[in-house]
Length: 297
Length: 313
Ligand code: SF4
Ligand code: SF4
Ligand code: FES
Image 1: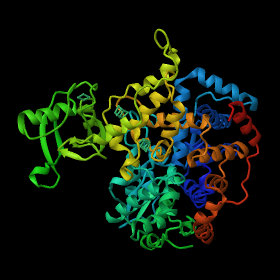
Image 2: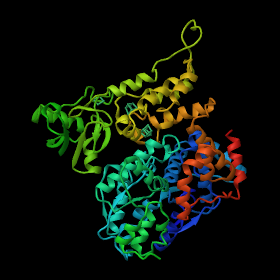
Image 3: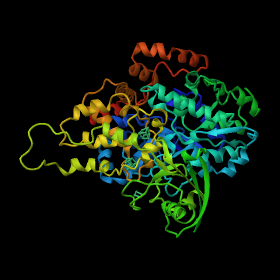
Image 4: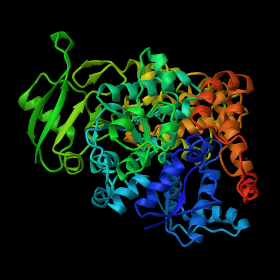
């Protein structure tokens, strides 16, 4: 399967371990990614607070770039980018006159969005296109005995009608569990898995954001999780980077390793901790590395 | 159609802790969760407490958590839940509000917050001779927010209220937009100032919970974003939230991508960024996790800037 690929800004800056891990793992899985190197930031939900039409125009530009390359599916490894793009695509398909107006703005660059692009996230593509059975067959180091807490992030769960979860794909809110099981691990059920990581308010009300980080990571810990896994780099930033501060706030140690989805898949596919950038996290992933039996280098 | 309702029971007078009780009911194909609960109350257990009235998604009294998500019991079809979510359906009282008994919660906080946003018109200047005339378009925007039936489902699922009860919350802020955006109101500036104060619109974490929960498509989060846009347009750019949006826009405008370091500096100001983020910076350096200090533009960045200009941002 060939995809136009948008990695998102954060996978190379805030969480620079994600980009190389994701490209290595998708290659091993046989997913061909063709990167949109002239694509722009999707706005991450923030730009929409300034001007919605601007967000729709910027994302239509990315879709047009994918169409120009003859590709009909745009894959991303960022839940937030996925959510914003799906929302824009939904709006543009509902309102053809609006799309025409946006195309006028894009015409200066010689671009036009014809409305043919489908947006997907690596998590969806693994389940829906690669298939869990194929994934299982590629496992060389099953995550036996590892208890993993799924953490989805808001943009890949809500709103359901934008994400195709009211009709075609009602079970997209269980894919992380399915992937964990396919890799031989045991998914942990806990309240926090469908909640917000708190990232969007960290610059505005840090205390509330830290409470969210503390609640979810501590709950996962109490339920016996060895690690937490997320398909969203922004959730990763918050749950990993701010976990030490959240622990101080909560007055108890947490030490919950937080994995990016491709890192967890890569572990089972036989990659080393260094290949997956596991030593580059803020919270030590050492316990996970040891339990999984993966090589360090 | 046979179904098992797993109902969360709590009676403070009994001294017992909250617990779940299973009830098997037989419902017609078109039965809603509320029909199941009423059948239980009528035929099996008269002690079950719940609120309901209209049974047609109008009065807003029957919001509760069904399979963990806040919904109207009278609008939620059992057959669909069975098909999509399994044979056992859990029913719990709403969240973020104290439980009085079983499925009945105390909504005082909900009403206090709605009252706090002054949910009535405050016109200025002399009254017109006849009626106030408004354009259809200006009412279209408000109509969505007017659909609110005050059920509390959004408040029940709000992730910020879970950690901070002082947050005004989705229902009150959607109501706030309904009045701030009304052309007949004369207090827009004061309203925007009040709604952008701490515990107001900038405290929302954009989790979409309220958008998913609302049975009337009010999409409270979108209304909160509407107020943010109104506030920035009205020049209220000094809140940290507004500075964050402005810095984000400027980064994307000039390079096509997000510059995380620049964003932190502009949102917090140099001094606070240096003090607050320094320990993190050192930890990041040790793990080779620093975002690039020199932020690279994409080759076509000037096209992006042109799109911003075209839309006046
Ligand atoms: S989007 Fe905002 S108001 Fe709505 S539930 Fe989430 S935090 Fe609460
Ligand atoms: S906004 Fe929607 S969910 Fe919230 S109280 Fe009103 S109708 Fe209910
Ligand atoms: S009973 Fe009136 S809304 Fe459900």
